[in-house]
Image 1 (cartoon, rainbow, N blue to C red):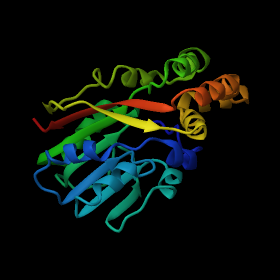
Image 2 (cartoon, rainbow, N blue to C red):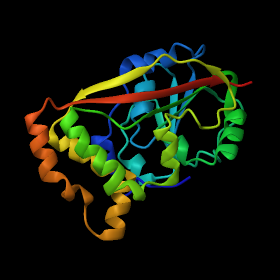
Image 3 (cartoon, rainbow, N blue to C red):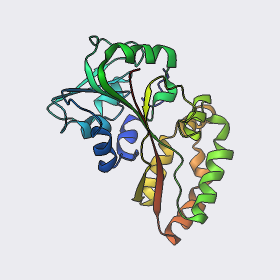
Length: 244
């Protein structure tokens, strides 16, 4: 899998939106036994931390030690460096395996083979994510211009899976149809700019051009943000399944 996020790990930890508690509770309601959970590509550990009150032990793995250095901690969370496709765990070890905003970076065939090895027969796999957020109509125009035009060619090809709401990823499991969720937030301008800065396309643009593309929209977006309601809505993505 690719590592697009080590460089901005502190920013990633600070500015990436959380998944709402009701979504996590809904997901956990499908898990019969709550002994051991695994969050793959855990990044800043936000999902691992939300799982920790419900399970005896939670593992969080990521290919980036820098991400793990910035991960939120709890007594029953164990963080380790490992790839999604080749873990060090025992066969049939986990009651729940989660992947949040990361599965599109994986080698699907190798990853799913590993899931079939380490998930318990009655366990659940859950793929979480979020698409492009929406806000007030005026700011939306500026942000969509940024997303599609300014940094549009700097997105990795895998981004298409998110744009397609994870509906087109391979999913070789007995699927559990999930109810829809959305994340409703109110952001300061700092939070908005901080989040745009965590986009992999923004970072690719900076690496190639040695300048920040956010500067191209900064003044217009700041004025728009100050004059509107600053509300943000993320469509949340959730696919759940059991081993066939």
